[in-house]
Image 1 (cartoon, rainbow, N blue to C red):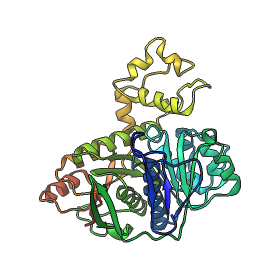
Image 2 (cartoon, one colour):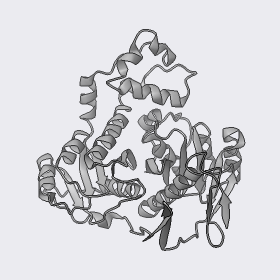
Image 3 (spheres, one colour):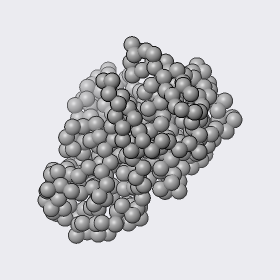
Image 4 (cartoon, helix red, strand yellow):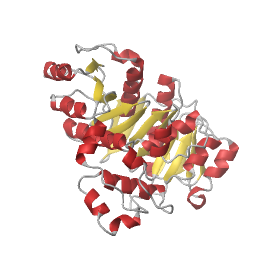
Amino acid sequence: MKYELKYGCNPNQKPASVSIDGELPITVLNGRAGYINLLDALNGYQLARELREATGYPGAASFKHVSPAGAAIGLPLDDTLRRMYFVDENIDLSPLACAYVRARGADRMSSFGDFAAVSDKVDMSLAKIMQHEVSDGIIAPDYDEDALELLKTKKKGNYTIIKMDESYVPDPIERRTVYGITFEQGRNNCKIDKSLLDNIVTENRELPESAKRDLVIALIALKYTQSNSVCYAENGQTIGVGAGQQSRIHCTRLAGGKADFWHLRSCPKVLSLPFRADIPRANRDNAIDLYLSDEECGDVLDEGKWQQFFTVRPEELTKEEKRAWLARFTETALASDAFFPFGDNIERAHRSGVRYIAEPGGSVRDEDVIACCNKHGIVMAFTGLRLFHH
């Protein structure tokens, strides 16, 4: 069976389609899926489903360009997270809605125009949340009828809605064609759970259940993130994903910078920014990013420029205040899809409050990396499992 796509990666790449021997496991209920849409949808659905299987909570992923901007499980949101994610305190959130709000909130700028993926049947609680977010589409195993009808109104009726057959079992061999040449490999069917964290190699061996949960979430996210990749996680969700970098330290820096921004969004000065009532959420996200950026903050707060976002000129968040706020966070988890070759990754992770690390191990400099962890009191487990994804 074949499904005709709008076009391939770019509008000039036509024709484009997806196909399979037999029935396709996806049903497009609304809109028309594109090539990248489906890559995001199918990767995101696998991630969300594996989060559900590993934790018992509903899972969600916010995908952009074949990597997750965020991934999370359906733990409740406290008042601070509601304010960070623009969720009214009076709105009731189902566990599935909490999962998506957290996944979207991990990196709201990167999630702009995402493809959402969830592990469970979409309910009205989630549909109402998604109604107000800029998103290209969603994939789920099923939809409540009222939720489906509401989602169909997005993007002037063109919002892509995909139903995934939960009983679908893919072929154990994957194939792709590059430059006319066919590649084959076995699917990455590795199971990620807490047992991967048993081989603790550091002096500090105290790995609480909450840290195990967050490391598992980070590892599952990495399984579907373009490599090289590093993921920071905390409180049931990713908070920084560094994807597709040629150097691992650049992954660690990129993801660490995102984790720092996520932590800074909870700072009282940021939560109380005096936004104009007519500023959409996406513009608020952009304004917060500029406000927190050392390079851009001065420009935003210049006379006249702040008026495009705020009712009054906000007070600057100084570098000293940022450092003091970030120093409060010391329980972050980090996972890497391959071994850390140098201790510089540990030093950078420590700056962002990382206390727990999971990585495959196997570097000729493992002892140096372990020593760096010991210096900072970090717990590190060697999983023995590499998670490259391309």
